[in-house]
Amino acid sequence: MSNKLRAGFGDQLANKFFKIAFVLVMALIVCSVSVSLFKRYKINLKRNENGMNFSDRIVFDDIKIHINNDLFSHDAINEEVYNNEVAEYLKRNLKKGDTVINISHNIGVHTLLMAKLVQQAGRVYFYNPSKKYVDAIKSSALANGFENRVLANALAMSDHSFNGLLVHKNNFPDITGKIKPDDYEIPVGYSALTIKASSLDEQLPNLQNVDLMEINVNEDCSEVIKGAINVIKRSKRISIIIKYDRANFTNSSTFKRLSSLGFKIHLIQSDGSLKQSDVNELKKMDRCFVLMRIL
Image (tube, rainbow, N blue to C red):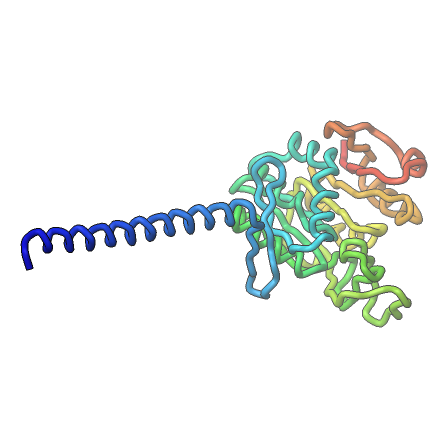
């Protein structure tokens, strides 16, 4: 074969090589861009150890929360985020090293804000009857580096320990449910989640000097208060936030019990400030957030 033919054959091989290389490089670029866009625009679904789907969302500027990927979970987050008066109060008053108890039927957004505010030296005890919300909070705490300060347990709070049910209307989320004993006859049109209940005094027999307790449940919390009375008495500077809904508070026993210990009623305003109030004023309101503290 002449030198001319060899040169032509070599040029053909080189051209084919460069074409193949160009196609491969372009394919890699396209794949890389596609993956990047996919990650950017697609909700990042994860699975925890129980196989539940989680998606990520940012709340309160920079806190990542892992939520069960369903409409109810998103609604639960919105409810807590848009209860701005409580968030503003927490930002105004919680400080590094504080000890907080959060008793909630919601997903626990405020728990993460509390954990951020008390910093590494603080502790936040979170109690929720729904295991899926507790799993979400544990996963979220880990994602934010709060895992050592958030102590979460799948328990309903009452004045004693028992096996029970969280009863709610069909097609309504767990957060709308009310605690009932396990022999409760579930009405037609309702569903129930099997839960365990306990009291704060049983769960935290040695805890003292709690700075804040938030109770956000869908019923009169008198039994929660009754079951936490020793924790409260050991905490001289404790403030207690209560979600008040006139439909659920059939009597004033919660406020009377705390008033007997020297607590005064305050309404939490939209900016997180407080307005002193009384039971008679509460009875005129449909719902609000109340803060009880000793002056």
